[in-house]
Length: 412
Image 1 (tube, helix red, strand yellow):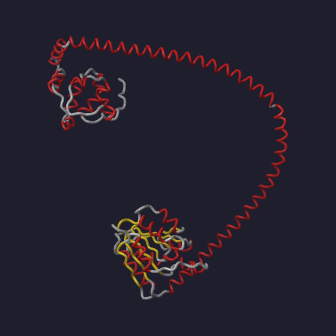
Image 2: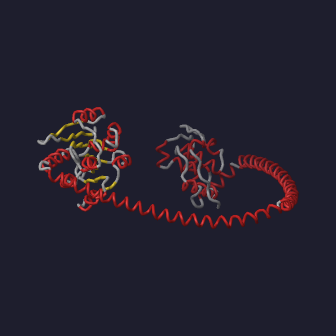
Image 3: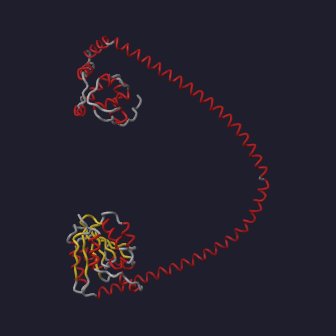
């Protein structure tokens, strides 16, 4: 028994209707009969298991009436409700032929009464197979003609191969002087090899010198990071109002966030990160200073050492509940405000919040030590920019030392 082929799509079988005749459905054969029966009675194409089961019934000699009834009177077929007049009595009769002894008698009588129709089908089958044989013989003759053409083409290619071999022989004789010149060039290349080896030795020395310079530069950068981290830490520790200010800001910020909210902080101190963590926030810090990033990790807080603009550009859409930037002035030096606000709207989930601090954090202190000026921040201007960017519930929290923060929410 050969396996059933894969079914076609419903659109490739036939359009469906509500009324069919038995002759219409039974006029097709084998796979096409099964596909059209499924399309008409179940409004779908047969699955692989169903197709194989129906093929086995056909190969076992079951009648098409029985297969049509098996599909029509299943629970799925009754739900579809396609109408096929006279299918039910003929289906019952076909099933009755399965009853031992009685079924044999019924089938014998049916065959006896249907002999004229069987002869009609036999003659039609003979004509069909004769037509198929005619097509087969015609196709076979066409293949024989193609085979003769291939043989002629093979002979032609063999002649061309012989001619090509003769040409290759001639080319070999012509290029004999070239081989001599190649030998001379080989000696010159050997001399050049010594020169290349000398250059490689010089390049190796140059690479060593460059590596030493890079190591010295890296050490200088490390020392600068340590110095900037120490200076920033001392200045923030000297700010007596800072603990009170940060506690108030943190409390106001987390009020609108969900428990265990995911917050990204950019460039803030360890004390601010700890204030957020104490309130149940899952905080991740980003800081371009290697020393500060290491100290944040030592405090048990996740930290990444990278440029904030690079990190923000790679954050997935609507993946954060909050973003805090206590040193907005330093960040605006590397990212224009219009781009920054667009990124914040993209990465915040609905109802998320952003906090901008206007004060001296480590990044601003580093800018001053390196002789760079930070952007001048106007709180009213920032509030208007947040409003224009689509943020809502914008509020400003002032402190007694003239520092303040601005909190805004992403629309829900």
